Amino acid sequence: MARNPNYFESICSVSRAFGKTVKKKELLNLIVDTAVTSMDGKAASLFLADEETDLFVPVAQKGLSRNYHHAAPEKARETVEQLIKKGHLAIHDALTDERMEHREAKKAEGIASILVVPVMVHGKAIGVLTLYTADQRKFTKEDIAFLTALAEQGGIAIERARLIEHIRRNARLFHDLSVSINASLDFKQIINTLTHDMARSFNAKGVTVQLLDLDKKTLKLIAGSGLSEPFTSKCPSPEEKSVKQTLNGETVYILDAPRDKGILNPDAYKKEGVAAVISAPIKSGNAVIGVLRMYFGTRRHLYDDEILMINAFAHQAGLSIHNAACYVSLEKDLKDYKEDMWSHRSWF
Image (tube, rainbow, N blue to C red; front, side):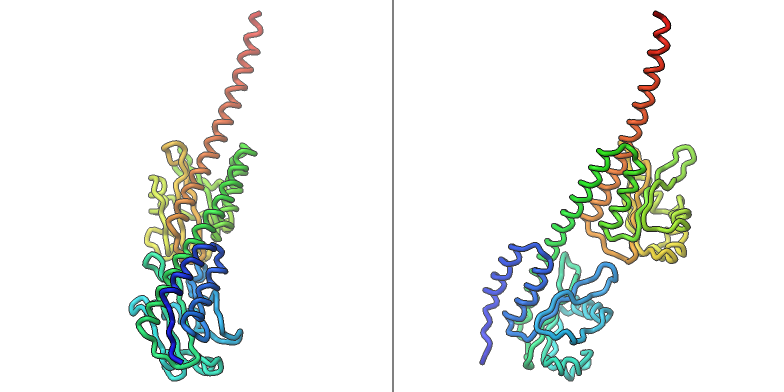
């Protein structure tokens, strides 16, 4: 029977469905379900980039057995690079095409043809959508255009879900930090809480807060989480380019610290397992008083909203330090006032 898919109706239907849910797992399943149903396929798989490993791993599939072997994550990354250049990959005969891995597994699974398209967001490939058919098929321009449009719509929906998840995460973190600031004027306790919560929330290897010693013109470690003492005792060097830039008010992100020319002790970063670093200035009023640094174990891409939130937390750290300093100053003024009043009583 000849296929007569109504791709326009399908893409309209799935777009409406994407707008009704922000749960990531539901979105992922909806993408593969729509691919199989609308294109009369045998199965479909969705691969997304893992931020921790920087590899593409399967996150949703339909119609494949649990024993089916996908290409290795490293191979998936190579496929993505090819897809960005060509726009798609169409395999007419998956059992004989030399580009295919695990051909025997595909035969056992009953896979005949394969169509692969990238999942793009803001010009960057965040994943791969793959359709498998039971019969050999020469994919038409309409087939390719539909699966590409589905991947693009899915990418937008995934990004939207990610943003909402980040907003909720950051709102919780801000709430917890605000509670800590209101509950205590011990800024060291507040900063320790901040570094621990930020490391956990951003899935970072570690976070440090260093304040500037105005007399010695050096940085002093105030709080840290997730990093060894030998590393924090000598990293970062005050002479590092990123540190100087941060003390001048800039936020600096280093994607590959062990290879960055501005890092003065790259072996220490490598030994600690640190790949990427972001430095944000801690301010009190208009003056930079310290540096907040977040360390990642992989060369992780940071979104603009994540960088904005890291800057916001650095600002909160500065605010808590300023409040604590004001409290100490008020306590001293009150003590001096009481002593002054006591001395004046001798006049009467």
